[in-house]
Image (cartoon, rainbow, N blue to C red; front, side):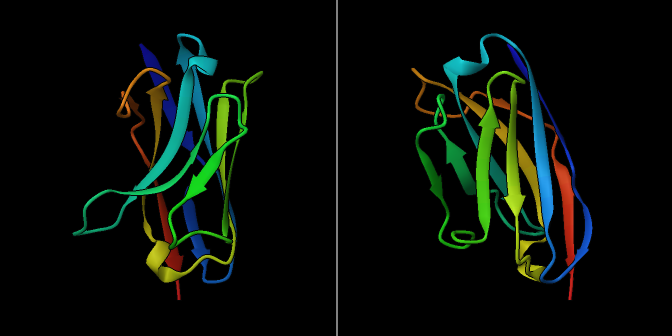
Length: 119
């Protein structure tokens, strides 16, 4: 079992920045690739960013590429999402997720943190 707790959400003006954090507890953190997903009101949850277990591979949705940066600190069992040049369309609940390196899907999810970007 892996428990994930997100933090760092809030209200920010368009063009601003936020850093989301996800604290993981439980089984070996380095056995998991980590991802950030988001769900806007009335929309399906969508992929935002992912980082491999060692942090050597990252990938981003086209909608956030060049503005968001995902990173992890395996010594602290944490993953981060740095969000810059925020837009109103980035408003969503952001979820942290863990995918075991042998799994085809994300196995564990956090409860989410709200990000609201005002115009």
